Length: 211
Picture 1 (spheres, rainbow, N blue to C red):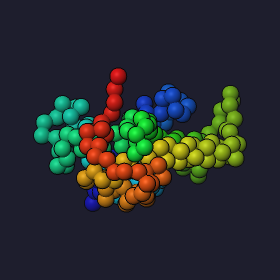
Picture 2 (cartoon, rainbow, N blue to C red):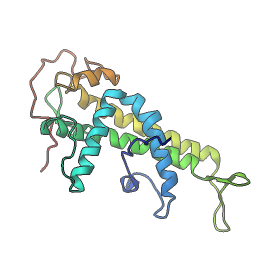
Picture 3 (cartoon, one colour):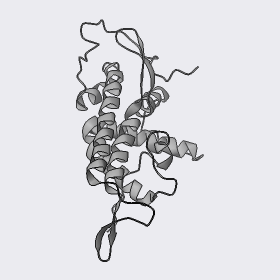
């Protein structure tokens, strides 16, 4: 019996300028930590609804980029697909108070979750003789407490990025079909800078703004 694994949402190149991943890193191990953090950190944080939207958009986007035909858009309109891309990749938006703000998407959050887990765990290798810690004549393994601190620092960074993205999600609470997802992901339907503000119809303002 073969069980198909869920798609990987990020890759090696997504860590550039964010974490120090060696060019010759063990990409198989990196993939392990990406998948782990997708399932154990990202999904519980954003909820099933947003997660399903993002995985569908990612599969559709990859299909289009590969020049595929009859790519499955999961029934979303082009405008809705643009909003999902913004949720994942980040962008600028008009906040409830009328100001222009920037968020970095749940992708940046996932990168930090995965990077911290990778740094903390990838120095240990499974061998026929048990789990060993890698070392050579030119280097020594970093102390475990330092690796734990790096993991903690990256998880904190992920939380900061999530707070910024939650502010963007709050502006979508009256936009179909995203309103249900907003409450599902733990983002309050009356967010901090939206409290007491007049609701506005911002239908076309959720696209990425480019210069």
